[in-house]
Image (tube, rainbow, N blue to C red; front, side, top):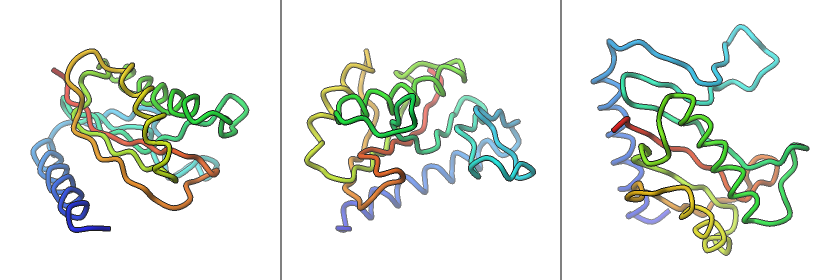
Length: 151
């Protein structure tokens, strides 16, 4: 990881912590919420809404058979549709997203992802990091997480 990526990640962490602290007194609304009392579900919630800020968990783009599609563009569309469902469940739109992190198992898929990504926004694009990583869960190509703030 180069220094630029470290600085970007550190800045995002600081902004997230500051935002969480600013909203500490607000109630939390869980989108696809999961509880520690249920051992039969993955140990995370899909998103958490605090005030006007939505924190989106990482999502991958499995198809209806819970498999990675053969086409990277189909996988990108699936993962962005999952993000869109969470954002809309919180009463927001994709244009409310302010920050996105894309983790990609092979940066050769950068253009395929971008071609699909562009179709999900109608206004300014969010700040974004596209990070090349090793193997993702289920051998996915993409995992996307983000933060949205209601306009």
